[in-house]
Amino acid sequence: MPDAIRRGPDWLDHPDLQRLLHDFALDDVQIELVGFRRSFAGKAWPYLGLVRMVSEGVHPVRWLVTLLHELAHVLDWRERRRLLEMGLGRPLQRGDGRRVWRMDRTHGNLWRRQFARLAEAAVAAGLFPGNEEAVLEHARSGAVSSDHVLLDLQADARVEADDLLRAESEARAAAEVAWQSFQELRASFRAGVVVHFDGGPVHGVVTGQVVRLNRQTCTVTADGVNWRVPHNYLRLGPAPPGARPAIRREAPRDRFRVGQEVAFRHEGVRRRGRVIRVNQKTCTVLTEQGETWRVAFGLLKVAADPHS
Image (cartoon, rainbow, N blue to C red; front, side, top):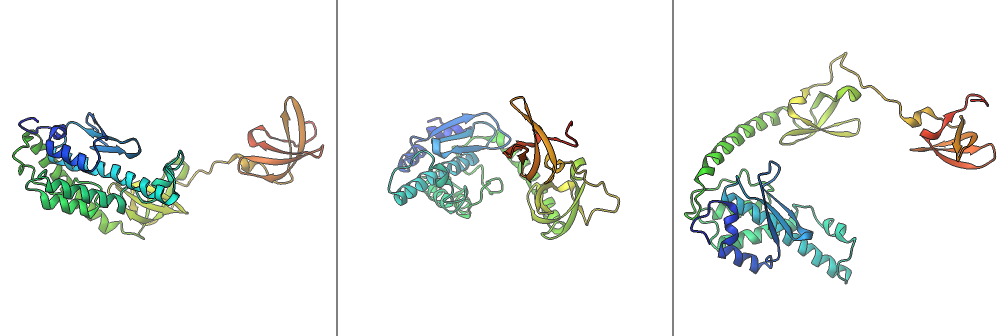
């Protein structure tokens, strides 16, 4: 084990963490280290027994919290699989994976239980000195992100990631500004409030109602369709008079109607008939020979006269 923990991956050599992995039968999990990612600090593929962790740019204390988060997904998957196999009375077979996932949400109660178990064991093993209560509260809350967990990043004397403390401080200050902005938006864009936004040249200016305020977007429902719209795209109230209308493009099926005379070719033979049903992607055509064909819209031609 190194004398100091300067990077998150240094934890993998820590005997207390190795003992924790052994106690939870997680020795076989492959922990793969990757470079900086904007989208995640850790990611798990539980059915493969694979956890991918960012190796740089994350404070070691937060890195360890994220590692426990991802390992909880592996434990969650294994527990679901065990319960499903007990219910089926047989081992899991190919194609049963979807049934395992349907047993609970990705960050549902089963995962929360496993995360709390891991956090309690890690705290008992002394892996979070000075942050015991914060880590336990975070794990038991079931929160997905640890960005807003108040951790004392200097409490563990083994961790010497001073170069990351400044970045952590700057990130927290930016998060506080974003949080204040979010609170102001929450006051304006409450559920049920009527808003409008520009949906582009095809949809025009869309008027709808706010369903949910998300961190970066609002979920807005309009004519039975849910949109995820960035906050700065939204304007309060309905669309003003004269706002850009939607441009309705003619769908292929709109060119045909029941009773219409059509023609098509099959293997070089031209056939003619009458539309008896318009389907989603085809027309059902009754030919002059009394045969029924289902023909794609792109292969049909409106027959205005016998020589068309």
